[in-house]
Image (cartoon, rainbow, N blue to C red; front, side, top):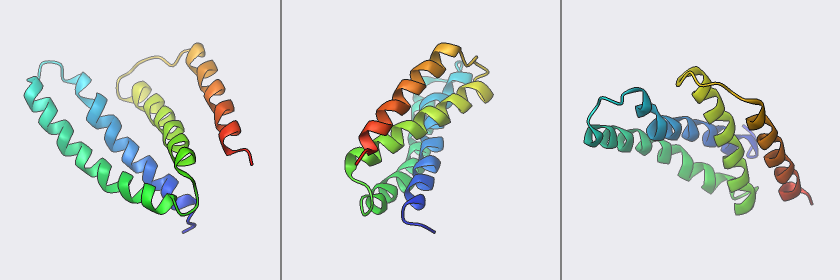
Length: 112
């Protein structure tokens, strides 16, 4: 697998875990907070198992700012899908406009 693609895939997987760790409990508001925190920590462990190697591998071909930018774009995409499918929230037009501006920022960060 390409050394350019592998970190992106690993960052995507890590982000799915982290999104569930941070926001998955919102569907279980009656659960005790201490239980939610412990479960979230358990899920976050798997996030780190992908995030740390993704950054280590990715830093061979991307600089740290580019890696962070990739991660933030992945976060927005994963969270958008998560909020629609899992939390059953609406995706509004103004979110899309905001994401377009973020994508423009990405273009500047990756410009040679």
